[in-house]
Length: 213
Ligand SMILES: [Zn+2]
Image 1 (cartoon, rainbow, N blue to C red):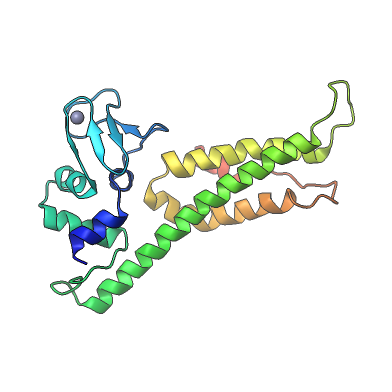
Image 2 (tube, helix red, strand yellow):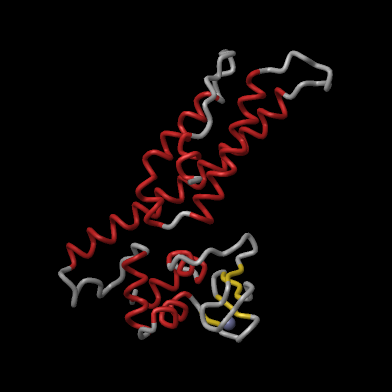
């Protein structure tokens, strides 16, 4: 498979835009980087389309236009950034072995990142369920379960973490905070699965305080 086919098969315009540091909103809209755009008028999905200037294309077109480089260079750049192997990879480069090592490391990071996002959203779901389960049955109930309080506190923090990871943090920030974030998530998972313990040890958000600065 040549580099164009390989990249087209697995990289979307959305991926390229986020990799470039653009932050699509929940409707996958961004301010168009190809015309003076004050409000988001470009939709980025598998392909991109700008309702303002009509710019359109796929992941490779986006990269070529955004970085001002040729199509082949754009495709090769994306292959490396997204950890995609293709037939001629490494021939003109520093050698196929080094290329493969770089691509492997990059691919691992992309998978780690995806797992992190999934883990946060699974945790969010679980917390919502716990809140429903331990919610006081009537508003006069003075005997509020600490498990309820803990889950309530954690859910807003987890919400914040998700927003931060997906919409705010740059790739570099995520890389440097990844380990700490995983530990933080593990703590939240742990204290919200132990149903026997009345002491949930809730101390939500050391990272939150630090990241919020
Ligand atoms: Zn535009």
